[in-house]
Figure: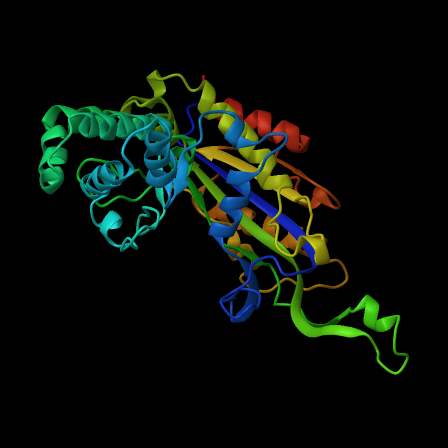
Length: 393
């Protein structure tokens, strides 16, 4: 079977943490089913999976993208100046190149006098694209253009052929762009749609939060005057706990197309080895990599207690509605969540018919889910199964 979509569902429990904060420093929340839930944003989850360094890291599988507002400063300006090029000329040319290549996103950030060249928003560029642009700046600078006509020199360099060559490199925009997409506003760089779709994780029950009062002790003050308590700082922070439901979708044809540079409609003819390995590693990361907020004071490390993978050709659908009615926390929150999930999946199968295939793993009372997947295979088994779904027959 050539699966067009791979869906991952997971349940992960965290005690006494503050995984993802809003602008006021409180845990992010969302109302669902008439009850406020604690939430972890998709941006938070994706960043930790994308930047994780260790076993099953995605970034080790292929050349990562350069994701920054300072890409042109670090990899073009500083590089060429270090090679002996005139700094003022390099900066002027690079500034014009940014405007042509990135369009509005380059002009949104006003350059401070003598400051680094920054784009108005984070740009995602592949190493081949960065190298191409650096060579373009080098060529333009080497032609010694009239300082008053640098804009014209840049436009002349980026003729129809040069633009075409750069557009072809968009398929080499890096692993980050292949998975998470990129947004550009120019007609030279093509925007890329994300092959990985990530939902905000939310608790399967109502929010559970507490204000934590804490103090930091001044050691010298505490060892000195006995009448002074030694407190160097007093404050409060919010801590939350909960069992979170998370949901991820992989658009397999788009992932293969983004990674291999083929047309989306011809994905089944392309090499799917890298895409399969990316998915295999992703399954491990989803199950084992936690958001890293407040590491020193909460140690927010947890592994998923449930992992369910589905493959098929139908439009994906979240299983969050299994928890539309908040799960009762007693006598066993996890068992109750399993029961709610099994009931919801059973209802969907009866209503729409069961399509595609499933694999799963879990801890605790997984017998409640015996009708959801044929046999438990452990996280490694689910990861291998998911990779085979991408490779196809």
